[in-house]
Structure formats: structure tokens, C-alpha cells
Length: 490
Ligand code: SF4
Ligand code: SF4
Image (cartoon, rainbow, N blue to C red; front, side):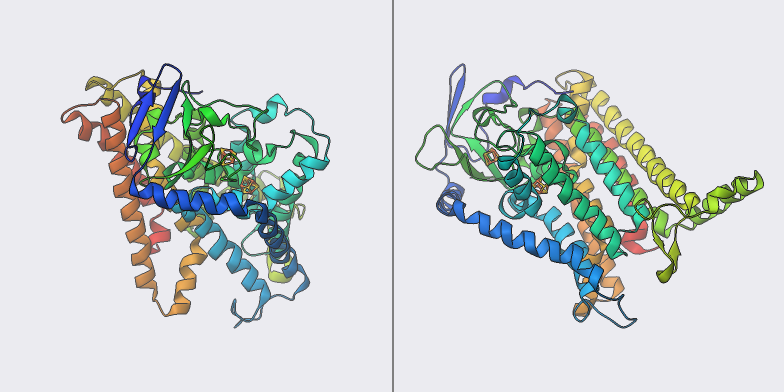
């Protein structure tokens, strides 16, 4: 459900020197110091955009080497390190460098990974130019499609043991690459239907790019809110003159023309600005559900590995099945659905499969309920103190307060190898825990600040603001509690 743009859509924003608004068009004249740097960036990529193909091709070859190469090497010896073993090297590059750093990079440069480097999106578009170019079907355009795609890939990654087994890594990443090419081959007309509608990584980066310091904004913006179009220049179907949100912009620089008054321009902004002013940037309920569910599923994927409670539960459920004569529960399933690696002494059976899926979904549902309840309570309080809009609208806007906490949770939880790499530089486990806790603490403060700014934008006054922000603090603390084992161990 989309929240309609607010009447403040034509209001000036920090960094805009002059805003001239008529009924239908807003002209933004920006001559601030940051704009000089932005213009240089813009000019550089405008001039060299045609060379991006070489970067995409290089990353394509490198990516294939990382996901398929380990299949041809023996398992690492006991004392092997990423510096002398290719299997470990590939694992650390993907999970310790690429995943967490790409996620963190959105704060600095938005979805620059997508537009400038990603080989999957480029391959999908390349296939699209040579493919059937069928119209994009309605089921694909449903806002829930990438959410389902993200949840399925995350759960499958856990049941396959994607961090530990090269075969699983090849299946998940190779499968994603094949799907991107296939979708490009069939649907869209010179577009990236995969990137806009299906890619689980793109969804993640897109949501958090709202926190980013880079924005592509129309020089002459048409008012009326964000629109979807399959006819324009934008490969992700943004109607560029109406563009208000960063979510779907992959930063391909195609709409940027420094001399054209009708083009888009690069604008640098304070990280978090779009979230603080979310009511002017197309807040949407499906996105909120995504990051609530996303934090939950990531936490579930981490906790089943470390909590003794999970092992107890597994034992009890397994005993119940055996006592009732359901012996098939102890049989191993197919290799493409779960980890079956007797040579590495890891074979999941149907009990493991069901328990991992059930546990992850249970944690996801629980955390989503907590975050939704705290947000709803905060939105209700905001309404009591003059907050504008309906309860659903205030709920949708206020939910964005959790974005910094959600981002750092994913980096700490799913990108844990980044921190274990620090051991190579001599840092002990105490120092590493301190860094993680420091990062989480900063994200919590940032979330609190954004919550306060969102409430301010809603017109909440006086002590109503800290009161309405308090449930958000509670929600963030629950997230912190869930990640406690990742931050400090058990
Ligand atoms: S949306 Fe996905 S496939 Fe497309 S460029 Fe981004 S990460 Fe790559
Ligand atoms: S808005 Fe412009 S930079 Fe962003 S994806 Fe569309 S064409 Fe590329």
C-alpha cells in the first residue's frame, strides 16, 4: 500500500539554495559547496559511462571464478588461511568483504554497486536486449514479489549451508545469476525487470539506499509523487521527472546530462536525510514489512546456529516424531534443498530442514510482531500529540526509524566474517566485540534521531515527541537483545 505524497512535497530541503515551485513543476537551483563535488562526480561518470561495460565484464569473470572456482579445489586443510587456500579465499571475499561492505557502502554512495559494478544486473540487461522482450507480467510487479524472493533465498542459504560449502555457494549465487539472465531474456523492453522486481540483493540495497548520501534528483521535478513507467530511459522503470525516492535507482547515470535542464543531477546530502523527511519521499508499507521481516529472518538464521535452546527443541521434536513412528524424519533430503556432505561430516535430514525453516520463520514472526507493535504504539501516541495523517500513514512513516538498526544488524549478523578478518590484524575477541557493540550503539542513536525527526515532520509537539519515540527505543533494544550472542557471545 502506497502512502500518498504529502502537501509539503514542494518544500525546500537542506542544501537547496533556491526552490521555485509552480502548480506542476519544481525547479531546484543548487549552488552549495557540496554541489561542486556532485557536479564533478556527475561529469566524470557522464564522460566515462561507456566504459562501465569493461567494469561489468571484469566483475562477471571475477564473480564466476569466486562462485565456481572452489568446486575444483580440495577442501581446506586444518591450518589453511584465506591467503593460501582458494576455497577459503573465495568464502571470505564473498561473505567477509563483498556482502558487508556492499551493504555498508549504501550509506556513502547508495546503490552504486548495482549501477557501476554488479555483473548480474548487467548480464540481465545484456540478455534483455537480445531476448523476447515480453511485457512485464502483473505478478512480477507485485510489491511482495522481491520480499518472497529474499525470504526464500535467505532460508535456502541456511538449509544448504551457503557459508560453509562451495556447492551451496555455487547453487545460490549461480542460480541467482541464471535467474537474472533468464528474466532478462524473457521480460521487459530494454529494461532490468530482474533488478526492479525480483533481485533479493537489490531489494536490500534499495531499501537502505534511502539512508545514503547520494541522490539522483530531477532539475525540473514534476510534482505528484513517484511513478512507474516502462517507456522512459530508466532501466528500473522510474519516471525520472517525478522521481522522489532512492529505492529503485541503481545509479546508472543514464538520465544524467550536465547541460540539459530536463535531466537528473547528482545531489549529495547528509546520510539519513531521506528517512528523516520520509513523508516527502514516497514511504510505502510493503517496504516496511520487508525490513521488519528481513531483520527477523536474518536474526533467526543466526540464532539457530548458536542457541542451545534450538538444539533442545530439535531433540524434543525429533523424539516426538520417532515415538509416533514417523521415521522418515531422520532421512537425508535432496542435495539441492539441504546440506548433504558426508565427506565433511554434515548431513541434514528432514527434521533439520523443518526445524531450521520453522525456527527462522518463528523468530521472523516474533520480531516483526514486536517491531510492528512498538511502531503502532508510537504512531498512536504521535496522533494524540498533533501528529498529522491517519494512523496507517503515521505507522508507515515512523517504521523507517528502524532502518539504521536493521542495517547494522544485517552487517553484524550475516557479515560476521568481516569482523573475524580483523583477527588477522592482531585484534583480540574483546576488541572485536567492542567494535561490533560500538557500531550497534551508533546505529541505535541514529535510529532514535531519525525517529525524532520523522515525528517532527508529522508535527508532533512538546513532550509528545520523546513519548512517541520511546516505543521505538524499546523495539531497538529488543533487536539488540536478539543480536547479543553475535555482539558479545553467549
Ligand atoms: S538489483 Fe541485483 S542484479 Fe540488479 S544490479 Fe542490483 S544486485 Fe545486481
Ligand atoms: S533514475 Fe537515472 S540513474 Fe537512477 S536508475 Fe534511473 S536512469 Fe539510472
